[in-house]
Structures are given as structure tokens and as C-alpha cells.
Length: 260
Image (cartoon, rainbow, N blue to C red):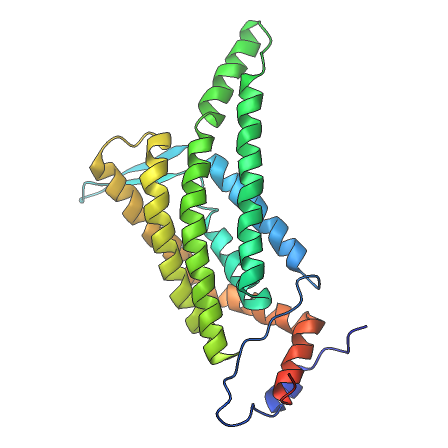
């Protein structure tokens, strides 16, 4: 049975590591607390984003600029995957983050294969059944391209995101949470969006290089700004999870007293 969580006041007054010793990184056990909930949320977000991203979205030209706002149907949801990735990396470490990334896309591939099987199954031969078949082919047919784009982009971007968070935490310890979130978010989303848009643009109906540039630029700006806007909430959730996870608090106490 784990010892009682250390209070915030005890954390503030715990002895600092010996002089010259790096603060190091503290992580909770994956089998404790909220990892399963965070993993389930990430898997759900990735699958829903893959379906939504198969739809191209246009809000028309920005008045006076001639700049068309082009995005996809998953734009409003996908940044949450990076928020969840930040939380998992900060609490449970880079290995757990890699497990979450790979699990998300293993399930996403399964979903994409399932869509193709559903499309291939013979429909009812009446007018309604044939209409539904055509609609499924149009809606779910291109999803595998979006999943492929997501695999390439999210794997690269989220891995970079997790690497930055874990490296900075190893160097800074519990300090600098906001700096970690700011730095990792921008780099991860930039790499992800460039790769994703290059592959997925075909699936959503983008036909010109100008549209691709607009789609990519808007995607980078939107995703980074959303993540930056979410940082106060993300950091508050991380701090709450740290306080309520007994294994995290135990390791903080061990580090504070110089224990291995």
C-alpha cells in the first residue's frame, strides 16, 4: 500500500538535492492513477480526428486579403491529442508516451481497415441501400489516406514533442513546466502539420500548391495557438494529477531526501 500523498507544503519545504546534483525527472507508475483514462482519451481523439480530417472545410476568403481559410473537419479536435501527449509525458515519462502514441495508431489502423471491410461488404440492393453504400464510400473511403498521413505526422511530431518535454524535465526537474509546454508544443505541431498536410491534402480535395500552403500555414498557426491558449489549463491539470498520484508524490519525497 502506498504511503499517504505528500502535501504541497511538504513539497515546498523538502530538502533540495545535494549541491552539484541535477534535479532529475520524477515520474509516476503507469499502473497507478489516471494513465488508463488519458490513454483512452488519446485513442478516441486520434480516431475521431482521422474521420473528421477526411472532410475538407472552407470558410471562404478573408475580406480584403484574398486568403482562403482552408482546413479539415478534425481541426477543432486534434490539438487535444498533443495536450494529452504533454500530460502523459510529464507524468509518466517518454516510454509511456511512446506506448500511448503507438497504441493510438494501432487502434486507428484497425479502425481504418474496418472501414474498408464495411465498404467492401455487399449492400442492400434497393435504392436506399445503394445510396448508403455510396455515402459510406465517399465519407470513409479516403480515411485510410488520412490515417497514413496521421501516422507519419503524429508519430514524428509527437515523438519530438515527448523528447523535448522529457529532456527539459531531466535537466530542470519540477521547475520550468510552462517552458516545457511552450517549447514542445510549437516544435511538435510544426513537424506534424507539415507532414500531415503534404499527404492528407489529396484525400480532402486540395488540388493546387497555393491551397496546400494555405492549408498548412493555417494548420500550424491554429494548432500552436490552441495549445498555447490551453497551457494554463494543461499545467493546472498536470499539477493536480501530480498532487493526487501517490507514486509521484512518493518519488518526489525520495528525491527531496536524497533517496535513490
